[in-house]
Every structure is written in structure tokens, then in C-alpha cells.
Image 1 (cartoon, rainbow, N blue to C red):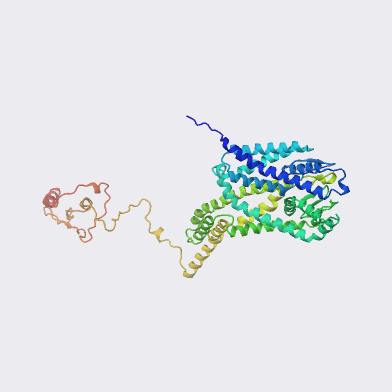
Image 2: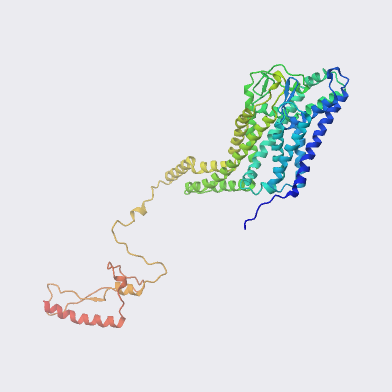
Length: 542
């Protein structure tokens, strides 16, 4: 009987609790912060008739933007995701799900469903304006991905394509870590260089310590977005802070900026620096080569195999150079081919991650010109492929042990090897004054000439062959013209074969080897009879 699949309902409550703990607690945190900031600035005439309930509602709506909601605030729209707050929610959910364990795809479905339900309830309570329902979709997708990764040992490891991701992770890890370090370094340098402008903008608000701390805290919630803008700047795709105001490594298009302190760290140069794009290209080429030589991109077994192929290929003799090169080409190519496959998978994931990061770090922060903030995901994907991935792959392929082994093999057995071998032979021939050895060709028998079979050393000839090829001891001949009739002719004596060598004269009779042998006594009697009858026959003929 076919076993029916059932859903274990015992995991429903643990998943519900793991999902709602980070959602509810972060929502309450956002509401409390909004109410606190309202309380410390309630005496400000800028607040007008705003009550604490309005502040709590704004905190809820701001929390919804963590999952991509678009909120209408005054005459503008707020849609830029506070990515640091989103990261706090996501990582809290991940650790909660790892604690309870995700063992089936039904748990993933429960996590996505409970997330969408909770966000929908909170959004309805806040009476948010604008397309806030996008947060329901964004939250469900985010928590489904988190639940899948939390249960990867049960859900992903046994899938047929998981080993490919595992092997590609070595390359992707190097790309992500190096890119993250470069991004953080450039951002820190830019912030230190523009710290004077940042302080000047912050001091213009005439705030006390609490007001300054609150503004710093709000800006920190968007810190990952600043880093992702820096990444787009490094890759050359650039980012915008308002309409007609863009920043890229090749040049900047400056325009009016909002008085936000962190924007004081933006670069101030304009155009004419297109040559700077060569810097990230060279950096990724060097990164690929260094990472390959250090063994960060391939396992040690593959590197050792390619190195052994290089040694065996270069130590082959001159006579077998071409055959050795052909034998070495296949394993070397297969080693490089495996790396190419892993690099393609890692490259696709890297481009996807860069494009997704640009999508997360784009949105709107106000009316008018501030409706365009961030970078375009398509531009970031294209520039990450051209500026980062391809140069990195080029450097890695050049420094790959299989490439080095192939170059050594081609140098040894290719054009240079053949020219060297030819010159060596010409030098040897000129020094000895000898001509090409043709003794083998001259001593070879002509076509159609029979060749006597030579016995194998240490192997005696068969007795039948000796009997068949040995001539009689005495052979009678016809008398000469001067001989007297009636006188028997004297037989010619033929020398016997050398008994020491025991070699028989070659015979051309095809059936010599199959002639039956005759006993020695019978053979001697037949010889005597032939000797007695031959003279009589000769006299009768005369």
C-alpha cells in the first residue's frame, strides 16, 4: 500500500511562536521609540497638534517599511527600507527557528503564513495609508527564506543540486568577503574625510544630547543602505540621492541635498575621473589570482593533482613529448572545467545578491526630488558582472594550477619543444658527421623473397622437421660421356649436416613440417637397396 503523507500539527505552535516573537517584539520596540522621541520633544512648536497616539501610529507604519511597505507621509512617500532593523528581525527569526527545528516543507509554509497574518493584523490596527500591503508579501517571502535556511539540513542538503552549491561556495565566499571589506573600507574613509561636513549639518539643528542621540539612532537604522550605495559606487553603477543627483566612481552629478548629517560624507568631485574605473577591475584581477594561488578557490586535492600533472608533463622524454601532451591535456582540462562550472554558479549567485541588495537599498524618503534614492538593480547586476566577476574569473583562471600545467606542457612539447629537439639533432649530426642510419632499410629483404625461419633461442627443432629436410648421405649420379659402359658410376659424396649445430638446410617444400619420420634402421636398409639398384639402371640405359 502507498503510504499517505501527513502533516505533523505538533509543529504548528512552535513555528507560530518562533515567527511572532521577533515580529511582535520589534513592532513594540518601534512604537515605544516613537512615543519616547515624541515625549522628549513634545514642547517643540514644530510638532503642532500631534498627539502620542499619532506617534505610536507612525512607529507602526515605520515598522511596516521594514518589509517593503510604501507609506504616504504628508505630501511624500516613505519606502526606503530600514535595512538594519530588518536585519535584526530576520536574524532573530532565524535563531528562533533554529532553536525549535524546521523538519518539513510544511513548517516553511506555516512560517510564511503566520508572518503574513501577523503583519496584516498590525497593518490594519495602525490604519496605515498607502500601499502598505506590500509588507505582507515581503514579510512572507522573507520568513519563508529564513525558515528554509534554518532547516537546510533536512530540506536542502539531500537535493541533487546542493553539492554544486557547496563547491561554488568556496568561490562565492571569497567574492563576498572581499567585496564587503572593500565596501566598508571605502565607506569609513569617506566618512572620516567628510566628518567636518557631517558635524556641521548635525550642529545646525541646535539639539540637546537626547536629540542628537535620536537622530544618530535613526540614521543607523539605514546603515546597510549606505554600505550598499558605496558598493554601487565602487562598481561604477552609482546611486542617486534625489532626481538629477548621482554619485559614481567615474564622476558625480551634484545637486541640492536634504540636510541629513550622513550625506555630508558624499564625495564632492564632479566629472573627469572615468579612469578610476580601472582600479576595481585591477583589484578583482589581483584578488582572483591571489586567492587561487593561496588555495582559497579550489581544494588542495585538485591543486596537487594539477601540480603532479605539470611535473609529469615536463619530465617526459623528447621522443614521447607529443603523446605525453595528449595524455595530460584531458585531466588538466577537466580540472579547469570543474573550476569553470563552480565559478559560473558562484558568479550567478554573486550577481543576484548584488542586484537584490540594490533593490533593498532603493526607495523614497520624501516628496519631490527625494522620490528617487538608491541605485537601479539592473545597472548593479550589469556592472557587478563586468567590473567584478569577469576580472576575478580572469585572474583566477590565469593562476589556476591546471593553466600553469598546460602552459608548461605546451612549452615542453609544443613549437618550442620541437624546435629545440630539431636543433639538438642537427648539432649532434654536425658534430659526428654521420648520416641518417639506413642499415635497417638496406638489410631488409626485398618483396617476394622467401625468408628462412630462425629457431627461437633455447628451443629445439622438432624431429619431424629434421627428418624432412635432411638429404640422403649418398646420391648416385649419371656417368660422364667418357665413362666406360657397364662400369658403375662412382657416387658423389655429399657432406652431412653439422651434427654439432644440428641445423637443417632450408627447404621450400610446403609440407616439409608434416612429413612423417622414418626409423633409423629402416632408413639405412632403404639406402643400401637404392645404392645396389642404381648402377644396374645406369648400365641398362647406356
